[in-house]
Image (cartoon, rainbow, N blue to C red; front, side, top):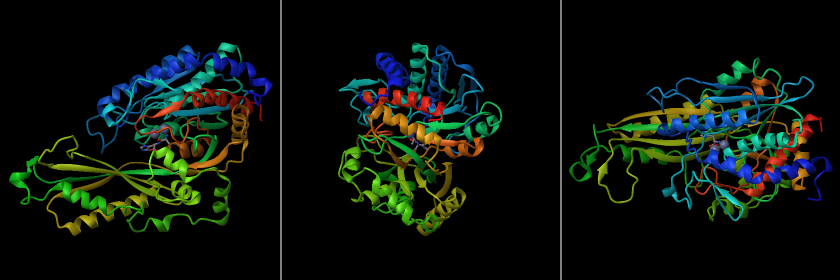
Length: 480
Ligand SMILES: C[C@H](N)C(=O)N[C@@H](Cc1c[nH]cn1)C(=O)O
Ligand SMILES: [Zn+2]
Ligand SMILES: [Zn+2]
């Protein structure tokens, strides 16, 4: 392309040449159904870690370590389930070069064909230059993208411009359990000389303009268990004469949030940092429209119409989403059952300056108070499953500048600076424990359908993304 700087032409040509191999590598990664939230698939998550280890060996990584994290704590696991390991590796250890730590996750969200996928979620399928499959964008595509960037250098006989450390985890979609502790332990060991941390695990805001991201919402995930009869019951024999756990649960869930997305738990709004004039003005320059939102959701269900309202509610205000009910009848048909025990699941996206502990107290007190009002003989137990902090940083530093130049070299346009409504629980820990800047450099588009059916990454985003990651390492390595 005409905007490609001369210095990158051979490297970008090599990346184009390796495209079939890169797609094949992603296909292999996607074929392993490593869903961290599904205990029955834990061995597949672990298998993905070993797949990455083998790829790293082939690429010539040094000091590959598989770090075990011990058992998964309750409430989700009560039967001694091992957490998936962290895969560490190193490319180069030259004291004259800077060191970049790249983090990504190899676990994925659940996916079933019957959820409404057009193709098997664990078979990467190319249609019209788009690659469909669970994890294609979140986050196997970007993780494999880093490996591809390393391979392109290797194939060209080009030295990496920085020392690279890779940190790949298998529990991100389930709260990054165990990783905080590992980062603390390794801060003065494996991660002793890290100059910058870069994460490719979010998405462009829309579908055409690249972005760099300097903020994330946090996430507190809760469950509410309601137990009643000793076993599931026939609703004809027992309906109307026993207290039904699911009736209680739907009433409790309905007290959490209204249909306009307003959280109904008292005391949360007061903790949200006020919007300053300067922050409000930052939204003016960002390219986004309600049409982008409707395109990403394939619907006309937006709660706000103006760009500012949408972006502020996505980035700087909390939200509460109800995700599901364990134990409730959900299959097709008309089963006349009274479920004996149900567990409602919901999460709250947190923002500055909400404290996770204060929030959890407000949430649990609210649920217990509402349950008392029901005067039900059933038993309730509300608890936090996991939490991850929000993160916000100043995007005016060497790391962001390098990524901005790389984006221009590949896409011919300066990226927008955005925040992200989703969460990457470990980001703040890297920043605090390693004392380094963190950059979020997303590859995928806003309509990739992460966590949804028909998740995809466009071939152009995948391949140009490998070029962007490569160019970023060069700009950062030479100090821009
Ligand atoms: C943004 C990132 N790709 C992502 O999807 N993060 C998850 C993290 C999470 C935490 N608990 C469960 N999942 C998210 O934002 O939902
Ligand atoms: Zn992710
Ligand atoms: Zn995700």
